Length: 156
Image 1 (cartoon, rainbow, N blue to C red):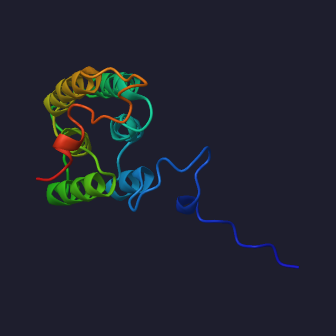
Image 2: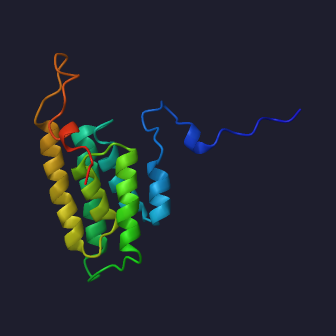
């Protein structure tokens, strides 16, 4: 008897379905050809509202620290298709209901050409973290809108 074909990776998730979307992070990273450090940093920015909050943003900054350290002697990085980077970031942001700020951060990281772009992304991450921390989560307000969330859903 033949075994059933395995369920494709995008149709299953270990530990739940909280990342299910029409455009998953690992596909986006692959389409852009991002490196490990960029991929990890963007993962934490993209998921911060769904999972780890401020700690995820701290992790993103840590990965960017390493990326900046590795590229201190490199004056710039060539991005071969900047318009494609913007379009894929826009599509990913929309599919995943990311805020404008989250999508801007991802675009800076995915399309960085100088370490200044990465430093700008870090600054925006600190702004995002401040917005996430503006309203503490309590039992009474757990269904309330978060500052900087739905009022800044991605809509360029």
